[in-house]
Image 1 (cartoon, rainbow, N blue to C red):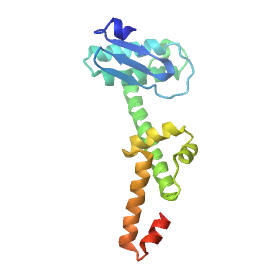
Image 2: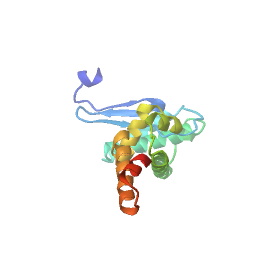
Image 3: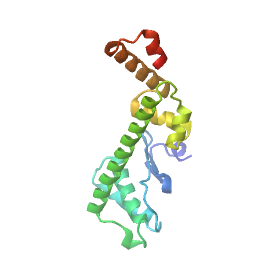
Image 4: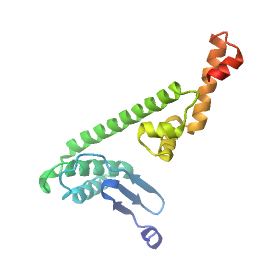
Length: 183
């Protein structure tokens, strides 16, 4: 409704643990919430708003401002109280770097798990089985595979099979039919 009614208005809508959305009539940016152990949500919105407005007033890019405000809000909800829970700016910047590193490590770990699963199950690799091993839905697993590898699950498995078959053709004396059976 707001997008339709106020086409040129800049809107930031906070969604609690689901993050926030920014819209300015041209661009829509979604910022997920950083995951922390929640102790008290009293100052979450005020902290987010204060940090966001502060960053925008310094001409910080909107995407970066949303990240900083989300990091500050995550710190605030991990503490008890209102004003005492609001973090210092340097603390927020450091936390943002840690959140980014944690996300990268998680993605790297997922990439290893996906690639290891396919390597170990080259003949029978199945997205439903992979999803179950990762603890995600099949659809979300497909999205992760595409994001991490750049290919759909099926295409990625095919590429891995072709690569392994090519290597076996060059490095072994196995007949083609035997390589096909292996892969």
